[in-house]
Length: 518
Picture (cartoon, rainbow, N blue to C red):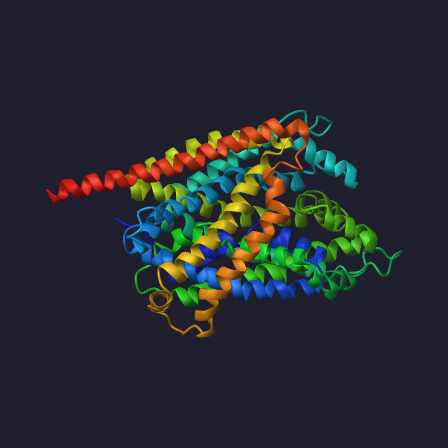
């Protein structure tokens, strides 16, 4: 029996849970601060209306359409939409490969958040009172060095096991009993934690009387005062478009799978907009009101620039614990901060697992239990290089191929196939089946022309500016090149293995159909 959602709110919470992740609270404020502050919101909202929302509708529509043919992953969905082309399903392999690769490293990073939640309450890092000592604490936890805090990977591996098992446990109970139930609890909890922290941040005022200009109001000013000169840089527009992919979870294949469990007349227009609105609330309002303003208030206008440039990890695991250590009840707020991020992480990671599990269920006719066991064993083995080769560039490689390259490429493929191969008139009718409201007709032109062109342009610029140097290992430490090459070969084998699995599954389908015909 095909799985399904129990309610509209359930599917909206699940899709929003997939979208609301670490990028909302860590990546977004950093990107905004580095790329023009308030001016960044211009290309950000341009990308939202020309790429984010159209791709959201494309994936909801294709997913629901493919679900009507008993397919829940990109290869089957693409095949059901374009049956005349027997090769089209292989484009869908990207929609399984991408989320699978992201899951492999995402769960390990997610486990750090669970660990730090406990460390906040236990005072484990209380003696780390400077940027240097807090970085040393994180590095020792990751097993990159030994010091008084940790002497090995034991603690990190324990929290990884707990996090991994939690993910598999949720996935095991399926769409309704696992993912939907988790998101219905986790998403409200996430917003409550975020709201508590935002209120505390707003009322911090001027934490250091010796520096009256270091206050929350000026912190918001640092983040949101527009630097319109940044709009002249292609990098700013690329950063905004990249953030849009990350924040909405489009171009990954997850929404395709989630939407495949909808009924034929379920509304994808309003559901998609609601999920987008929930994500934007979490990102722009809540995510933009925590990290940068509070870091400005404690570290001032000079250090905040270096902090913003230092990256999301340092902000989340170094800067924020130091800040919470300086305020009353800081351990409680630090716990809420890390649990907020862990909650955002786990609702995203379970969504990343679902395409691969659904593929095993749909195309190999496996029951949920067996499919989850196969997925769990395979991904557990594949997680080991990330854990033990963290200092050798493993996460960067997984993130580049799974979370950047495949994400942009798959989004481009989807947009072209939907508008030009499926056909815009047919696609427009499919989008509006069961819809409570009509999409403005201008979006018919946007989806057909502007979205694909925007994506092709982004892909071209991105390949030229970042992709080709990365592929050629220009920025890889010479000592790590052999490790990076090994990881790339492993990822290639995973991709080819998935393609072979797709080919085998369709061959078995044909044989089964032939037997039934006889």
